[in-house]
Amino acid sequence: MSALLPRLPGPDHTLAFLRQGYRFIGNACDRLGSDRFRARLMLRPVICARGEDAARLIYDPDLFTRNGAMPPSVLRLLQDKGSVQLLDDASHRHRKALFAGLLMTDEAERSFLEVFDAEWRLALRDWTAKGRITLFDEVNLVLTRAIFRWAGVPLDNPRQMAGDLSSAVENTGRIGPRMWLALARRHRVEKRIRRVIDQARASGANDATPLHRVAGFRDADGSLLSPDKATVELINILRPTVAVGRYVTFAALALHQHPAWRDALRSAREDSFQRFAEEVRRFYPFFPAIGGIARRDFRQGGLEMSKGDWLMVDLFGTCHDPRLFPSPRDFDAGRDLSWRSFGFDFVPQGAGDPHRGHRCPGERLTVAVIRHATRLLVEAMDYAVPRQDATVSLSRIPALPRSGMALSGIRERA
Ligand code: HEM
Image 1: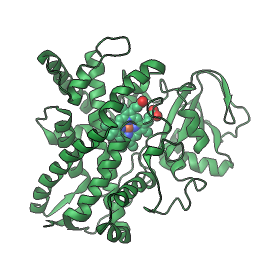
Image 2 (image 1 turned 90 degrees about the horizontal axis):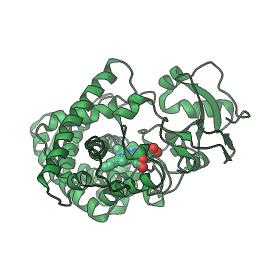
Image 3 (image 1 turned 180 degrees about the vertical axis):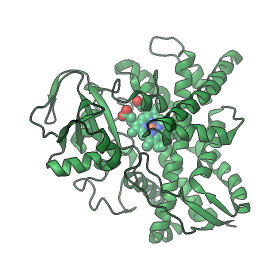
């Protein structure tokens, strides 16, 4: 591992990471005057880095694998064993094509927004009847109903499912009982989805729903995915879609904190909503950093690494790098950002070419949902934002406005 890099003083930095959260890598870089440094996390040596060059490195699939790059509990709660994220080379590209074909198309965006819009408008009637709602909880429920309907997966207890799926994301940064409970809830989801996969296979039906596409998908060697793997991959579509509720909550916070943008959106075209959604993804904290394990010895981009070395790249810090984004701490929906650039600077959901590397295949849907939800918040309803503590702590991973964004006096607009 690069001996010349500055080293963060102290025997282990796990506690500092837990305390500083999203700012851990950036704080240490500023303190050491370097974009890369050596540290120890969970008693394991790691190189931490930020910026475009670092993102380029860790998203080079020939140099890094995700195998062994995440603590086992985080892996279980998020992508899980047997998932596309843990594959490399041709088997990764083959499995990834399943996700790209399902998620990254015009038709996927159009059809998902249609069900999302319908579920939101149905929920809006209910919100109008209630005095006050917590937007985060309600949007998670709307997204759960929408993604199950869109994917062709039966849903018998929407509230429980919404809670189970969001608890996996909520508790990734936790240790102890909260994490154990989240693992138990994940297990309940797996049992349910495994049954759905078994039934889909037994029915012999072979329609174009994501459920049947996953159930009938053949890996690069021509074999059907094992039931466990098919379960994991279907959950890899359901869980992160519900997680977009966090960005929708941030979008509502941005509308509240920046009324000028809200006014500007009232008569705006689609591309203004799109830019607003992209700035929500750049500005607000979600996925803090990504880890990778070197697949071989190499010297590149100013780093010398040996096979097995651990690199962690700051996604949040890269999105707030003043060399890439002028005045990065200002929310500015006038920036011209887009997931379509497939670049290495604007990296809230990973970097580079999603077909070749591990960049998120759900970016297009994520942006579409934030954009459309923002439109619904601005155009389809009136509401008040009651007094509340909506502060966003950067030491809590994953971050959220403390109140979850309470809204009151909701009225449907004619
Ligand atoms: C990968 C973040 C939404 C499915 C990733 C990665 C990040 C990310 C950072 C890269 C992981 C890596 O480099 O190893 C997010 C965030 C989202 C989101 C913040 C907002 C909620 C979605 C959606 C879907 C999705 C909506 C599917 C419907 C996936 C899958 C991968 C992935 C399957 C693994 C890709 C691979 O390893 O090749 N996501 N994602 N994500 N995401 Fe997302």
